[in-house]
Length: 281
Image 1: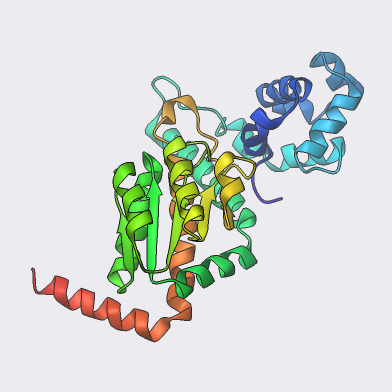
Image 2: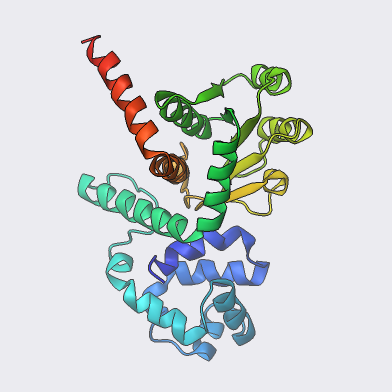
């Protein structure tokens, strides 16, 4: 396990049972003390039970309480610096940099492990087999959709992108060429994105979904499901920075894999694009 155990707890917090969540919150507030505790002592101090401690460890992907203490010990330097906490009032710039780096590193590491190579290959097959790429997302996910649009457009692919949900609906039903729809939503519950994904399915358009929620309404519709870290967003970082960055990471993996498989054509198109842009300077 390469990423921080406190980060994992924050990521999984909302999926834990009530008893596990209460215990996890206590551990996150007192991580250094837990390292030297027994199961019985922790259960008493956290107003929990040994059985709940074991269940929490399994929910976090750990082999047991000893593994939990080992992971906390490994992460002690970051814990001592409180890098897993949110930005606080009058914090130093250096510490803000460290905290943001800590969260991003863990988000990228988790996303790296979550993204399945076979699923990525299947997504590339859909992109290669079909003439048109449709892509849509809202808010920060919309920025990722726009990134997909500009990247694939530069290498000569026909990409349809709009921030207008109604225009995208029209494009999906009126386009006569075979297409692939890339839907992006961190929560997987944005109704506009779900609606477009359902339209795509009704049009026999394969749906590639980038989300952190494998059990979401959007994920259920997917032909190809690319799972990312949720970003472990803290209140002050309400702009979904982390989740957007890992979505961009997933999108870049898609683009780079496609470019590698279609290397000569991609390089030729990129060179032409570069030359055209150079004439504008």
